[in-house]
Image 1 (cartoon, rainbow, N blue to C red):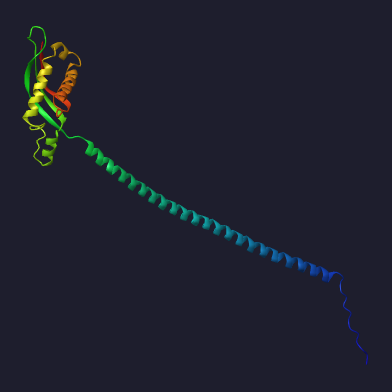
Image 2 (image 1 turned 120 degrees about the vertical axis):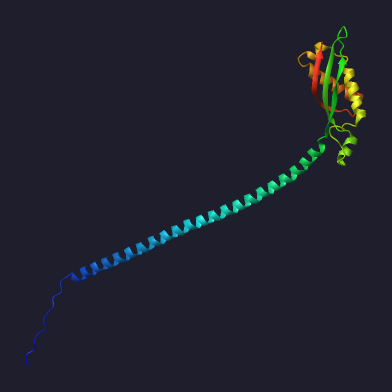
Length: 212
């Protein structure tokens, strides 16, 4: 029996190698692209997470600073109010109590030659309240106007002092510019020297007539 010969398969030189090389190149290129995409996404999320963390830290720090500043401001305001309160109390305690002493108008002969000139004046004295008036006012029985300044006794002393000062003035001096202000100064000095209770702080003329 005759044996049938097997067909001989001719292999093309380099075919397997080229195919293997192409497959290797394709396989190597594909993982490189996939790997690059994953690393880029991770980097992006890391950057977003870092920015968010920085924002949270900044907000927390800002809130802490705001609360701290508020506490410091409240403490400073409380300290300032505590310091101001005693100062106000001391100022009010140091402010003297003043009273008014109105005097009825009267006529005084002046020192002009001939003896025909005179002055008719009415005035109100504002003076620091004497000790007895302060005690009376504290009890609610003090009159800061009609009975001020120690009553009629001190009023008579003030009136007599004013007459004594006016009688030494001349009409030209009283009618000159600044004559009334100079007269007020003389009256204050004379009344304080006459009686220490007459600490006059101001004088208001309700009537002032000078006849040369």
